[in-house]
Image 1: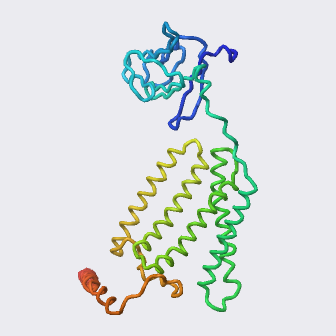
Image 2: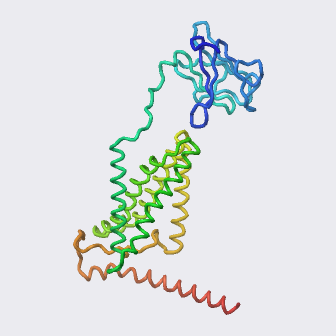
Image 3: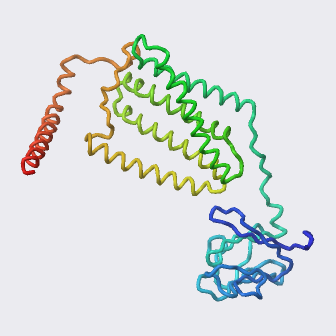
Length: 335
């Protein structure tokens, strides 16, 4: 094996996200790149010519890239090279055909990024996890308590007390299995620390946002509540995927964004088709607590005047519903 001090450069194969797949030492100049066996580095890419490019020192000792005749050409730092081009002092990104390479020279070794620390669980992080779990359980129990009939026995609490921890354990366990598959570590605690804050935020939005918007009499912002809750759940999914696939964060972000936009489009279209509105529930389905109402009141005559335009809309809906019933009745008679 050659000694490291005899290495004049290092050439690395990069994937789509810019992560190193493999590398090869460069012992001397010139460096020949191509598919032919007489090259210094043989590339197994069918989009590369037999002799695709050459890297060599000029008379002043600077490295130059020489693009040889080929169909797909050579790119240096994202720009096409015709003829010869000087290489930068830092690492040079090369694209030969479909092969992404990075050439690291001895002068570029001083530009290395600092060492990254390994992720470690701190005591403060563990305390925040327990606090988020307690808050989520308290909010869920409080909502269930408000929905239970007076005098309900303790058995009514069992599905919630058992269902929430089991569902959370199954969710984090499934992500931990994916981490075991892609990273070879069963990171249950890591995914639990991700899920709890997002679920807590989504629960707070679900319980407090409608009440707050109804108390302020802001129906437009009230309609945003369901979309905001969905956005929080999408961000939680994005955080899980980034934690599971840390080397493909760009692809994860693009995939989650595309999925979220597609899902939002379909949901909005179906809701509008069914309810002629962007939300399925009407605004007055949320009755604000009278003591918390902050919006001012108006005279009853003003309320009647503002409700007058609704008469035409309701009449149109009644006529449309009657038309649908008549068409359905005619179809049944023909059958």
